[in-house]
Picture (tube, rainbow, N blue to C red):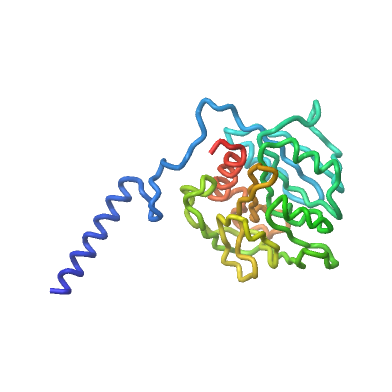
Length: 267
């Protein structure tokens, strides 16, 4: 009798799972197509991309943004916290400023002025290691890393580990930036021993055996939305058989795109 009930329960469970799958409901209880979407009538997000202080592979990096139909970007190149190349016409006002730079020493007035240019912010990959001598940086990003050679007060001595195949687990499937994204595997640089603020809202973790499993979180600075994503090294310095990088990985690109839209207040 018990065995019969077990078979019946298994059949019913499989039947329910099949119906949910046909209805477009994932195993996390989120119906496909029911994640928030930007208004079709909304203009593209105005994005300012900030680079400098760290090498990267520009063609694959910018190709990821060129493929996003809902954003239009401009690019600023920084050197030691000061702009050395700006868009034609200068720097304007933007919905989101995305930092992919890695600045030395302390926060400069020129870099700080970029915080006034955006309604929201995305900090990507090595940007977490900017301004190791400015403890205030953690209050802006929600976390901080110190990749410099010497110790810095208030910032742990962090490390980086190249070419790591990692399993990325979505922690918050309800958040607009990660809604509809399943766990995925990807080769990317991993960080260890970073400083994460206790109020940071973690969206994603990595299985890399480290002290700091959180690799994506949200934060608030000056009443503006902030998103940090640790993946994003790209192919620079990797062997030729490295496989798809972050900027060629559809799951990561979706998180990045949805994260920009969220920081802009569109999701």
